[in-house]
Length: 562
Image (tube, rainbow, N blue to C red; front, top):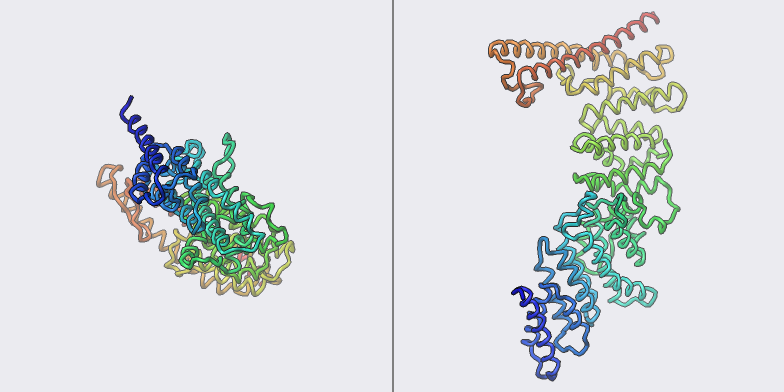
């Protein structure tokens, strides 16, 4: 017989011997040392996977040494001491004995249940959450299985709370409900916030979807689901008995409640319980706090949930139906600003593209004044030429709708538009503006100006462009001419220097560096640098071409009038 197997059988035999000896002792003869012997033998059984034998002992009413409180602390100690790859295995092994001990406790049962769940979740939280289909199927550390085992462990206590909710509430029942609610809030943050919750092919029962369903069901059964959904919007917090938890809740519940909204409004968990009496704009307003929380994160799993929640909230609405007054809520300003950061800074391409589509969706939902206000805000705050160019294109589209009477409004004609054009048709730093860095915005602005000159004549002057023509020339066209001449001269000189250096080196593959617009470019061969410099010149030529066309159109229109 192998030595390891022999030691395990010895541990079981020793446990049984201790039990038999203690069963014949009188109450007065039972000492603390007897329990210590039992605890050591029990610990050995747990370590070797013989939890069943220990469970029998716990359930046997004859055993005087089974002091529920001591055994409870011993089981928690076992959970606390485990780490790494053994965490899930150990937790699952101890859940049934722990549950049995908790039911035997007479005092502080709610506290003990809460302590158990908190200890278990604290041990699980450092483990990475499986995200890909393969990781979920493999469940290498057993986290998927363990999470569902933990929620099954909690169910009898939930049932106890639900059964007593119709009766006169005793303090203990309220405390137990509070502890279970804390567990649900923690579970929403981990593992659900970072878990992959989309339906996956060839996975019959998605473990995290099952876990999410169970958590939602517990919240519903305890009548806390709908209050939690609207918690942040109403600006209140749960009335926790434990004041220490209030601080923790305020720091961590934002993530949990954002995940809850995602589960309900994107994945439709518990949506059948949700009262269908709220307008889409009100639900968007409620979700904006959660969307902001999610968009500030950088993990793909969390960021994608924020984008999905934003998109689903917007898709419920009709175009042009969102009143401009909603922009008075700070979330309606900060969320699109966060969206811009995702568009410009996120390294994940499909999330950048999705964020751009959602920004357009957000713009489309506002009424005319809302669009106007949003454009002004984003032009002032985006600090990104590509985004500014995109907003200018949107402004052009709204002007077109106004001029063609498709959408009759005063916000994109007349004095309102003149104020907006003041932000668009100018160079931020005059002739010193970095034209290459701002090329997207400059091209969009020139195309807008060309459109205005063509579509609006001086007699009608619906857009006001002819009224402010002198200002446009002073702040935009003339500085652009000067800037183009300076930039082209600079880049042409750089190209000439590079060619001379190449001839001197007699080697076109010599690696060197170049500084353009104050930024040092990555190490490249001379030929590669020449290619970049020629590309910049091509951009300047393109801008110059559109500029010349705009000035030609202005001249023709003025001559026609005179």
